[in-house]
Image 1 (cartoon, rainbow, N blue to C red):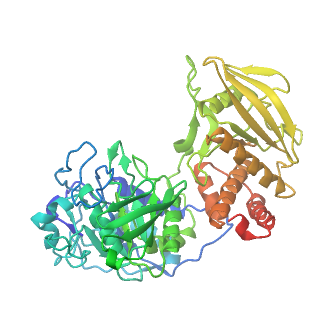
Image 2 (cartoon, one colour):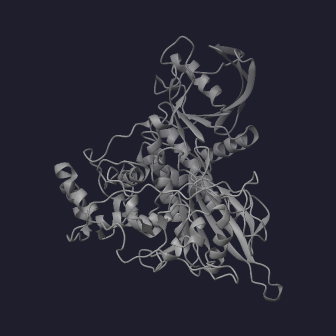
Image 3 (spheres, helix red, strand yellow):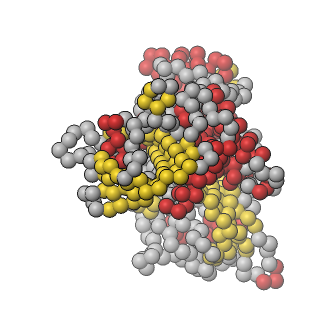
Length: 602
């Protein structure tokens, strides 16, 4: 991909890790290094480490993958079945002038060599490079070449192809661009803004493509067919900051024909960080030589916020692992298109295992507050500092903010607790503590034993109480007297989990998780409020088990480590003890043992 020299601005410099980061690309790379190095906090597991890591290669990958980029995309509704011309939904043709992508400046390169580093020397080398205001980091980064001196972009610069480029300065090199099969009678129909990119150990493993424009959707699917691609990686949302960023090049349901490629949607799976869509594609138009159907899987990363970058790289790393494991061996290049820079799967996965075992040093990491996901409640009129409650949003397996992890209410915070329940429309409460344990109060009773009780504007009435094998179910009618509205809320009070230790077996946990999920299906998928006494150990274990079991059922994959790691980035001390961590494995084993045939729950 060509970076034209006149697009550089000397005032914008991308810095390597630990330097002054400016801009979303650099910031996310910074977080990728730092957050991956943040371990779970306890030595439960250790990942194997590669023998060498090259700091220069980290930055080379950022430069090379300008091609996985970048941008401002126009909204796409549907493509015509047999037409190469496209119109927007209001009938106007998309004749927007190509824009320039702001790029990052580099100083002239030097002849100094930067050999790989042994992993056991990594911390020492980081300290050395950080000395003197990160002097060596700056020198190493500035030594990277901006682009090959001999590279040309003649095909991309042709007048006939200019409208196919989203940015006038992000162009494919002639030597590495993807060539489409020419369409008879259509000049320059072999051009698409896409380039082959080598993987870690494989030539042309990726195709870095521009996100499809309205007028290039047909060419995009033609490339997918001709390159025998089975995997598409999309790292942008169709709409961001209320702007359309990428043409929707697939139908929402059913099938649609793009040029001579028919695309039908076979399956859609929505997860917390990404969506997986399975397409069946077939070349049409030649009835005498009908081509077989092919399966193409699109992995659409959806956790990139409208502003800034993802708080943690865990979602991206899980996403890349999924892409790598699901791409068939027989398939052609993986097609990648996104808004900013995406590190290739091979490189990123190698870095993940490398940084996993590096010990944390407080001098190297900025402390990260949990303010980013704390639960906020409306300020009470005339009273300051009444928007706080000790609770955090927690992501689940399929959606964000699936849980509210809260401490057990204190006598003076019961009203705040119910205001939180009402404000966030939580219809399920999971209580994992007794009111009193070992002679100490662990949670205030925030519901009436009989009749009703009021907490500020919230009135709570006990409608029904039922004892199950290991938990109690209470049906509560909650009324907001100011709004004159009522809701049914169900509390699941689990018994048999001591403050110190774990339940005797996993059956009770499995049963209560199933009951809560059934309640959620009936009441709507609003956040599940989970609390113990502190809102960490037992609360975190419940959230981890609920998430892990859902993934086991959906994918047949168990990953307790990454689940707990993700929980701890969202709220401190989630899954507090080794015993609780081991309990997660035991519960999953009991769950599997309950089925004589693994396929019954896969």
